[in-house]
Image (tube, rainbow, N blue to C red; front, side, top):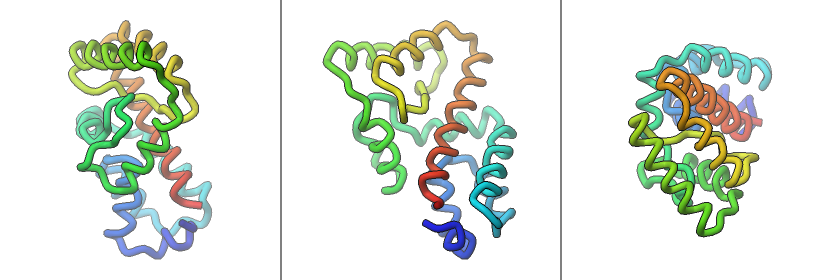
Length: 166
């Protein structure tokens, strides 16, 4: 949609647009309050700055809305737009049976260690790159991993926002 259209949406509709990018209520609220935006760059920079303020409890809650990496079908609880984003982002990942099994096992190991799903910006990455990152991140401390998850969730949100608002 065009920026002008986004600026003119009622708050409920605009909230749904932003929620499809990231399930972070404070981020959504702040971006809504800043409307109207004079340019897409202003919206993007505001979204980026707000993403830097995210705290772990809200990030953790947002993770519950993301499908596991390697799951080709997004969870039914996601909005249609979120399902489209997820399918588009993960749909480019080519995996053979061995890689699929390694991702599945890595996801289990990751969830066992950290207590939440492995989140990575899948767009632009191969299945092997995603697996390599998963294996590297399994060596992180809890604090290091929370910082990486925040970074990845921010990248996903901004990528989606960029795709959603022209």
